[in-house]
Image 1: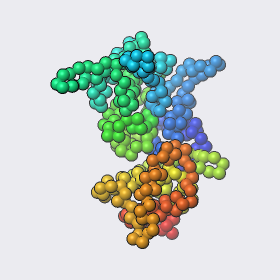
Image 2: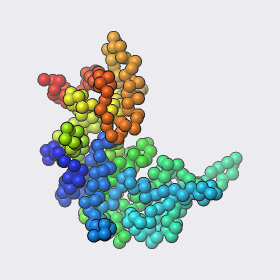
Image 3: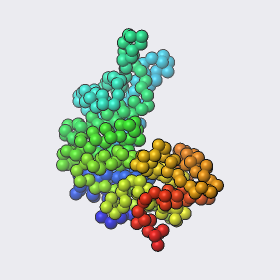
Image 4: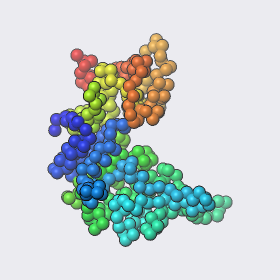
Length: 371
């Protein structure tokens, strides 16, 4: 398929659904701030049936994204500071059949891959209680009703979701409504050290899905996405970018055979084009640092900033690392892009030119310069 541009995310979501009529899976790589989570919501909304009162009477998408975590919330027992429980939103169809499907036993073997705490679900109270075995001075005790860390909570929710995915794949009655499984950026919520394990396990689950169930996975995480691409069976793979224009914004998808889809190369091409046009935004510093981190690992450098190689007489030599550090760690770099100040555009242009010219990238990636 040639590159395609869509006026908005609902239009792109409709296109993805059309692609899934012929393909069992669609994989989407995009940078943070592009609109992946909003795309997953638009995709889900297309499958809803809403009655005259505005109530959802049917749906077809089981999804994991940032909103999934909001179905769980803490009661910290502020009065006594003892019985802390994680509460479950009982109104969501996500938890259909919670009482009769023995979710504890389905989640536990998944969770044991990643953590050492225990849990028990109360399907009547819609709560989860956590405990942990601790050893002090040679004595082993179990601490009940603990509040687990945010990272551990995210792992628990991910494993809860995987258990539900398995029920849908097994065509359990409570989840026969599932036609699509849409997973957006699980690595954003999980420990990056688990990226390969999470991707491998997920791919093994999904590649043998029943023919009636279709799958979409989107991510910004290079390693996670690469494993998914290699282990899924002939997926449609897209590179998604957001284009800012005078009249608003549009969304562009490219198949991997029409773009340099080793992700650091795709990032370099996008940054080079942005620098040429002057349309540079703060998140481009975040992209540049990620490319340098990947390149440093490839070339065997000890630190990512070893990729910064200014001229000996460059008066800004000591500034470049500091600029990237500052500009790649603000929240603005990940979400709503802000245009760079002129001074930062100058720093970015110098850094990018140094990086491209001092490392052996193919000139074919940058035809404007070749001309």
